[in-house]
Image (cartoon, rainbow, N blue to C red; front, side, top):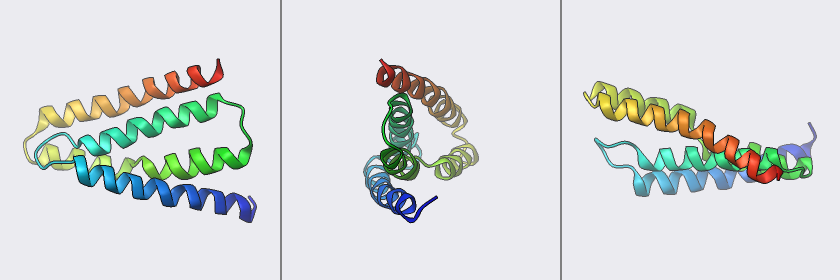
Length: 118
C-alpha cells in the first residue's frame, strides 16, 4: 500500500464520516428504527456493489469503496442501536432493523454489482 493509497482512503473516509453523521443526526429518532443509520448502511452497500461491479482504477476504488463507503457505513453503530432497541423492549423494531440492514444490504450490494457490470 502506497502513501497515495492511504491518502485516497483518508479523503474518502473524511467525507463518508461527515455524511454519515449528518444523515444519522437528521433522521434518527429515539424509540424508533434508526432510519439514518439504516439509510447510510444500505446506500453504502449499494455503492460498494456498484464500485466492485465496474472496472475502475484502483485509486478510485480506494477513494469511493474503502474510504467513502467504508466510513459511510457503520457496523458498530448499528449493533449498538440493535442492543439499545432490544434493551428498551423494542424487540420488533430490533428484529426489523436487523433484517432490513442485513437482508437489504446483501440485496442492494448484488443489485449494485449487477447494474454496474452491465
